[in-house]
Length: 606
Ligand code: ADP
Image 1 (cartoon, rainbow, N blue to C red):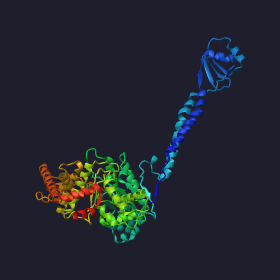
Image 2: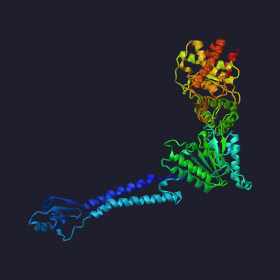
Image 3: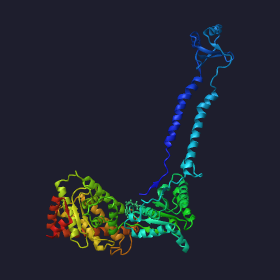
Image 4: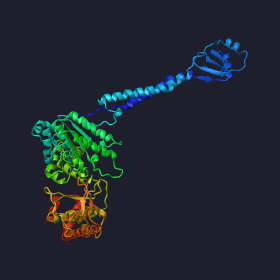
């Protein structure tokens, strides 16, 4: 792991606590004093009885205002009462021992109490605010930074570290690594490039499906080149206020230029780099941020030592201005790993766990066809967890195989209880798939059949594993695949004369395949090589949108139905020919619940 150096978080709560404490103290200590200094009004009777009880300290008769001010014995509280015509008053007061004060009894003026209760707290608040902002500024280290970090970029600085990620940690992806090695070489010695006058691309765009190691590759470039690594996600630029994102971009580039040579990595760049399409109510903030990014990229000269890397899984949605030469002009595809790549990734991650000697990674890699690097890492970890659960000291082949199943189909459902009839149906269904697959040429061999329910909702499944790499699929192979998918339902029909909901997933997949054959791969005689659908985002699910009139669309639907129907009939035919084997295998699976591909083939070939 890289050592990430972060600015310490300011404990704002700490300052608030101090402010509240001061306010509380103020209320407890100062307020009573103020209240005491306030004059309390009492009636004449109270004054008389206090006089008789000799409770009076000082007294002042204010004839003009027609009132008497007096204090209690300790001269802490001040009282006021109205004057009544009372000739004996002076005599009585004299007897009570009160001191006559000609001057005013010192009292808190309204001005003082106003100052204490209103102005003082404000002064305290402002003082603390000043202090805090000065402190923050000092930490941020820039005179131009605004108080409370407004508009500051939170780009993290990954300081070079010997424990950093290297290219050797990224398995497979050889082509991507080759392209990036050039950048590492450039960061090591820009002089050689300058001499000839060759300019490094300013920006490199890593595109590919999620979890294929794009972030890892960017980190590896920084690790290999031993330069600072600034990393930010596109979404971090998107702020609530227009202009703030742009300020962050400016700040990021300012920091980067100071630290050059360095690498700036922007993950998920599509968050800010989307096409500006002038929609009504468009996103001003995002567009400003993008404009700022474009300007900054033009702003730094070639060979300034700042290399910009960005990752996205939606390259088609990026603004053309962003991908033109001079900006992100180099595009490196980071695709899902092939068989060899998968094996290498498994080995890289297996280095971190204890693996027993019997493990054959090529088998695991073949089983995990279509898995991304992140999924493979997850498979190894699941296997390690399983080994711990079973109290073993090392990860075995079985652990890895089981964890692939967990990733494909979820955990085994321990307490799902199928009725006898249901279990029999599932057994026939799965054997139907396997039999149709086995009886066709060009089908992937069956690896395992199971009827143990899984948490994903699957009641059973048949695992087929390709022998080697597969880049092209022929029309026959695709048809066979559809036939295999319909084999489950066909077996149910044959054995029970009725159908169940169990085939819903098969139906979905078969339809998808058939539709793709006709509308995208040009595999129907009728439409020849005309595309009826276009793929929207190839790396994320690959959903499609129609590119034909509705009349054509309904014809596509008809062809899809025809195609699937034909394959369904073919599958039913295969099963009918092998009726005895179907019964025998289904019975066997029903008893054993899980059988291997070899067991299956043995019975089939007897
Ligand atoms: P992305 O940025 O493409 O979505 P990441 O680079 O974040 O993917 O990869 C996620 C995780 O998957 C990594 O932390 C790593 O464990 C694993 N991984 C992905 N690709 C590879 C690879 N080629 N070699 C080794 N590990 C990989």
